Image (cartoon, rainbow, N blue to C red):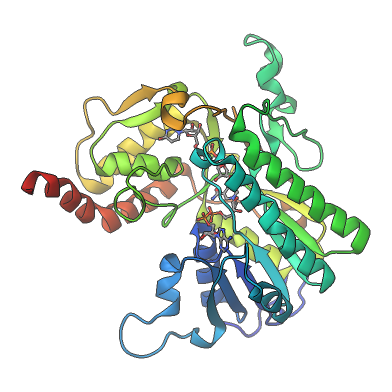
Length: 390
Ligand SMILES: NC(=O)c1ccc[n+]([C@@H]2O[C@H](COP(=O)([O-])OP(=O)(O)OC[C@H]3O[C@@H](n4cnc5c(N)ncnc54)[C@H](O)[C@@H]3O)[C@@H](O)[C@H]2O)c1
Ligand SMILES: O=c1ccn([C@@H]2O[C@H](COP(=O)(O)OP(=O)(O)O[C@H]3OC[C@@H](O)[C@H](O)[C@H]3O)[C@@H](O)[C@H]2O)c(=O)[nH]1
């Protein structure tokens, strides 16, 4: 497994220690799994939660896990814990995933959103710069905001021209709505931390890579309200729609479900991150879009496809009315706004790392919804039957 591994230029890969902040989240859990199963690297996993990586920390039966000596979990909040700097000093590479990153929070908890995505990330950047540590920082495709094309007249033929909607790391502008549309608090905070990291690179020689994920989805994403998260919580769309399907409720389409997204399978995206980890000479100083331009759908089409796939994996027929429309004000509250369309340009990641996504939207939904059904269907049935029994 570990021996004989080489990078993209044929050089042997040396084992390193990675301090992964936010390791207990959706992306972190998949990245930990991949690193432990397929590489010789060590992980200092930092998070306030560990539920999603419990299977990597504790053996389910007797005996120990094969990677037991290569992962340590440090339960800490990077907001206010003096241990952070020491952990960064112990590592060769720091990966920062920690963030508030669910749209329902951006307009309702803008202060927490800005603090989490900018202020709390500052010491991480500072300690990396001061200690000459390499940093891979997770930003977002939301940095791009809206497309130029969406400001053209509805019937303009230029709307079909990729120059008006394909998002390029080194050329596209960042277009956010007005301040009262607090949705953009997240994108704006992420933009400023990107600029700070870039400036640390330019002025102080920080070795950095910035990742802009375009809607990575798969098992363990967010939570199912009332089962492993708050009943009133609003997760990202995959978990919202999964929750509706599991409870046999119509899927809620915000403002008609006209926004478009490209979805990439988490396992494909993690391959890209591993290439960045193990090919520093090719990844340093770059900002990478990581998405799947071939998996574009409107949110309405996503709802229809998830309904079909879920019916297949659960063997339950779809509802007669599988979707309902809801206004964004009703669903998210005041200050919500939306990205209209998100197609990643793949030139830079292709050129630097030769990475391409593989999994179709149908296939990734099939494996993800199989997981959702297996993980939650029984718990939902129990939760639904409880009030009736009381
Ligand atoms: N999933 C996506 O498609 C996507 C898209 C764009 C950007 N991103 C970015 O990728 C990163 C990871 O996203 P994710 O989907 O895994 O989200 P997630 O919410 O599942 O994971 C984030 C993790 O960070 C931890 N965390 C937050 N604040 C912390 C703090 N102060 N101290 C310690 N731990 C803290 C959380 O507990 C959580 O486990 C985020 O920066 C997010 O903005 C993700
Ligand atoms: O139940 C729902 C949930 C969501 N939606 C819509 O589905 C679309 C996607 O919503 P998501 O919750 O997945 O979040 P978005 O794609 O808007 O933003 C995400 O993008 C990248 C990351 O930085 C973050 O994880 C998040 O900001 C939006 O248009 C939203 O309005 C619904 O129509 N119904």
